[in-house]
Image 1 (tube, rainbow, N blue to C red):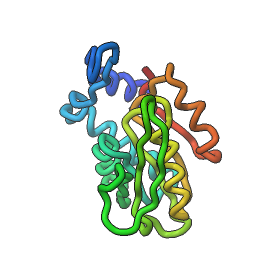
Image 2: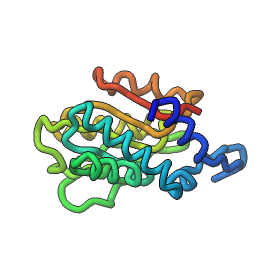
Image 3: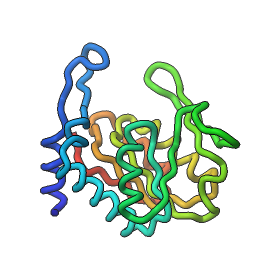
Amino acid sequence: MTDTALAELLSSRIRDVPDYPKPGVLFKDIAPLLADAEAFAALTTALAGRAGELGATKVVGLEARGFVLAAPAAFAAGLGFVPIRKKGKLPGEVFEQSYDLEYGSATLEVQCDAFEPGEKVLVVDDVLATGGTIAASLDLVRRTGAQLVGVVVLMELGLLGGRDRLSTHLDGAPLETLVTV
C-alpha cells in the first residue's frame, strides 16, 4: 500500500469528537480505526515494516494509546515491546522523566533493565501534539543506554508545533507521521 493510500485509509477511520474532553477541544478518536480490521492491519503492517527498515530490536509504546499501536507492531515485526508508563505504574527500579503540560506537569517511567546497552529502539505513539510526552520518552530511552532509531506517530497535530520542539531530542533519528491533521 502506498503512503498516500495508507494515510487516506487511516484518516477515513479517525473520528472527530467536538468539545471532548472539554469545550473547544476537537478530540481525534482512533477507536473506529482500531475496530476496522483492514485499517488496523494496514497500520500494524506499516509500523512493523518501519521497525524492520530502521533495524529496531525493540518497539516502545507510550501510555496509553501508544500501547495499542506499538505492541501488535512489535509482535508483527518479531520484536520485543517495552511500555513507557505514567509514574507509579511499573514495578522495580525505574528511570523517570518529568515534563511540562499546558497546565502542570507529568512524569513518565521506564524500567531500568528494559533494554540492553546499545539496543536499537523505535518509539511509537498515537499523536504528536506539543511534543512533551514524546520528548520525555526519548530522554528515558537514552538514559537506559539504548539507541533511538526513530519515532513513528499515527497522527500529527501540525498547528501545535510538536515537531519543532522535538528536533533537539531526535539526534538525527527520523520522525515520521502517517497522518497530519
